[in-house]
Image 1 (cartoon, each protein chain N blue to C red):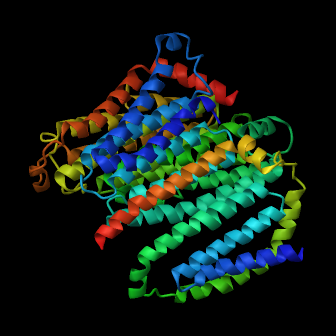
Image 2 (tube, helix red, strand yellow; image 1 turned 120 degrees about the vertical axis):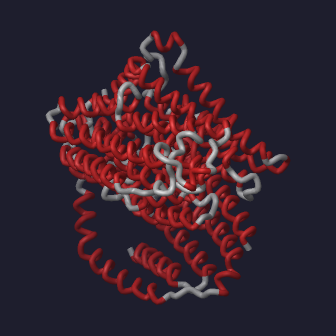
Image 3 (cartoon, helix red, strand yellow; image 1 turned 90 degrees about the vertical axis):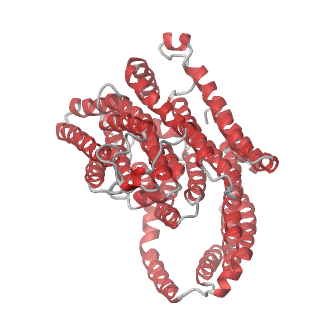
Amino acid sequence: MTYHTLLFLFTAIFAVWAVMARKLLTSAIMLALVSVCVALIFFDFGAPWAGVFELSVCAGLITVLFVGAVSLVRTVEEKSPENRTRFQALPPALAIFAIAAWFYLPPFLDELAGWARPGTGGGTIGLALWDMRRPDLLGQVLMLAAGVFVIKSVFPRRTENK
Amino acid sequence: MDKGLLAYLLIPLFAAVIIPFAARCRRKLADIIAAVTLLAGLANLAWLVLRPSVINGGFADIPGDGLSLLLVATIYLIGLCVTFFSAWFMDEELPNRPAYYSLILVSVAAMTGVVTTSDFFTLYVFIEVLAVTTFALITTDESAGGIEGALKYFFLTFPASALIIAGLAVLLLTLGSLSFENLRIFMASDIPSGPVTFGAALMLLGFLIKSGVVPFHAWTPDAYQGAYAPVSAHLAGIVTKISGVYAIVKLATLLRFFDGRAQGLSGMLMFLGMLSIAVGALAALRQKDFKRMLAFSSISQVGYIVLAAGLGTPLAIMGAVFHLVNHATFKTVLFLNSASLERSAGTTDMDKLGGLEHSMPWTSWTSVVALLSTAGVPPLSGFWSKLLIILALWESGFKTYAVLALLFSIVTLAYFMVMQRKVFFGLKTRAAENSPEVSAPLLAPVVLLSAVIVALGLLFPYFYTYVRVVTERIIL
């Protein structure tokens, strides 16, 4: 229970840090840490294949893409620093949400659990990936291709505009 | 997933990966590879469905549920027209030209994934791929309007994704599986459907936002108007129809609206459909920009599909599927014509245009065909789909909705007539003085699609047989 609570707490802290950070690079790293924590939660909840995807795609590949993008826009960012006062509203808003969730979410989830049915998942990572969720794997490949082409579409224009 | 159609997903993906390497030797190869890939796919699909033996057999031999096949063909047809049009429309020196074609092919692969899958999570993954590619495609020429449209598309459809994923979580918890078949079996049983319907309602809400149905339409006009001209046609013609409207029709059949299950959801969907028809048509009447008017018209036409999906009877589903295909064809023609206008006259502001019929006769008359079909004038394809929807409403006792749907069809004709008079008929304005007809390659896709609109209308008995087979397979 303590382990879970700590993981949830770290996830929330890193997520808020990612939004509040002054430097884009810090935001990208914090986002990667959020993904690591979420992957650990997945592992702990007995969903190893979801954890593997979260770790490889979100914490790994997406972070590499973000860091690459940040290195390209850094000069612009340094020339015109962003007005960040509006982000100050985030911690109080989150606190209100957390208090509301503390009261309402557990009874809601308890009620929903009454309707729960056993899932058809389970088995090893290989079985889950190759036999049960193969189309999702194809979707992930398509998503990676889309990400690469988006970068190839946006960056040449940026370079030219400079 | 329909394995028989897997090649239609894999081949565009493979071609998309090849394009950047091939374009290094010769940039024109990017256009050629994209167009040839889609043309070959379309030819193969035509061979599967349009053989005399298949037609004589009442389409009983077509693989899968038939709906996937029909929609894959529509996706390939619109993709081919947009790709061919872009090859002649796009600036030769645009640095992201090869990536543009790769993105179009990836979006075609993603849409094929959406219509061939039989699992909600896979559907979600492919819809997200579509969202990512669409975001980049809208900003192709990096105009201020394009960036604004792309950001609105991204930020307003993001909550939709969150709602869909929340719905998926509830569905997985209460159903134990995310496959379409399990939901169909559950809804056919006598078990109280409470939380399952709640999960489906969350997903429906997400798909309604992605479809741009009123009151979730805030992103649609800006995205369509600001997008790079050929991309508007791709977006309005097929992308939003597959990423939102198709999913709504699919859910409507799985939730068995026709036998009274999930009656509240069915009523809500019908009301939003009617609201969309009315608001879209009335807003289109007041527009001064051609593309913006088309965007509101699109909202209105999507309303007809949502209204029919909400009703959910076999006749209504037939009308919804047919109107979805029709909408893809006539809206693509109109948006591609708006791109031609932008190229030739330099503006899409209807107050600055006029008398273009003499200098741009092909653009003018293909617009007439598309607008008459949109308004439901016989014997064009739009007439039959609207007739099916209105008949289904009347038969089921929703006579007020039927009359309103008919009335707003007349409003559709009115705003399109106003557009035609302002843009193509009447006296020539200064902007129209030096506006020659666009080149033949730019006209070829709109002429082809106009021919499809006429053919679907005139050969309606054949198409009716096909759509009936589809409806029997997806509902029963």
